[in-house]
Image (cartoon, rainbow, N blue to C red; front, side, top):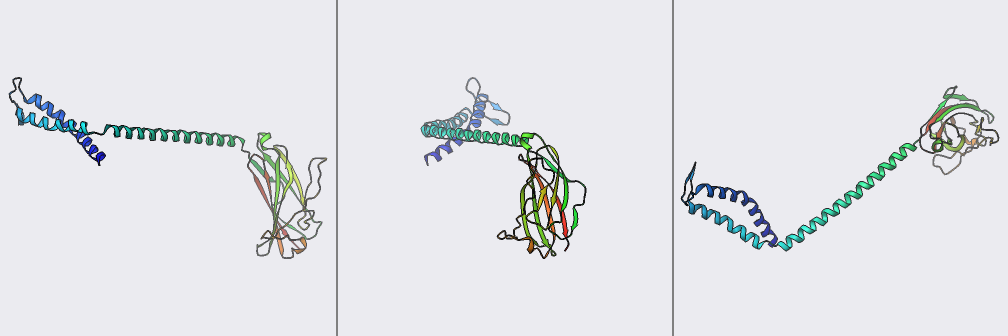
Length: 263
C-alpha cells in the first residue's frame, strides 16, 4: 500500500512539474517590481492569488519527497539492474551459441560433396529371359567432387526390389560396396544375374588384385522378417535396381534400372 501511495505521489509530481514552471513564469510576469498586480493579455493576475496557487502546488511536492520510501526504491532499482544484467548475459550466451552454429554450418558446407551417376549406353528398361546364368551388363559413369580426402573413396550401393504383376512388392534387398570409386571420375562396369541370388552382381572392371567375384543378394519379404529364395519368385514379373554412389562427405546420385522378367 505504501508503494502504491508513493507511486501516485510521484506521478503527481511528474505531472506538476510543467504546471509549476508555468505558474512561476506567470508569477514573475504578473507582478510589478513593487509587488503590484499587472495585466496579462487575456487574464488579470493578483499577487495573493498567484502566491496561494504556487504555495498549494509546492507544499505537496515537499511532502512527497519527505514521505518517499527511498530505501525501498533503491532496493527495487538494484533488483531491476541485476535482472537487466542477467538478461544481457543470456543474450551474449545466445549470440555466442548462434555464432558457433553458423561456423559449424559453414564448415560443413565446405566439406559437402556432390556426385552424379549416369547410365552409359543401353536402355533403363529391359527384358530378361529366365535362367540362373542369364546376365545383364550395365555400364555407369560416376563423378564425385573434390576435395579428394573428403569425398573419396565413394561407396557404390545397390538396392533391389522384386514385384509381381500387380506391382506389389515381393521382396527387397540391398548390397553395400558393390563397387568402390577412388577417382573423381570413374567408369564402373557390372554384371547382374536377376534369377541368381547367390551370384547376383559382379563388378567386372574392378582393379587387378582385388577381384572379389560375384556378390550374393539377401532378399527379404516386405515385413523384413523372412528371406525369400529365388525359387519362390514364381509370381514375379519385374525387378527394379537402384544403383547409388555415396561419397563419405555427403551427397549422392542414383540410377534406376527396370528389368522385365520372362519365363
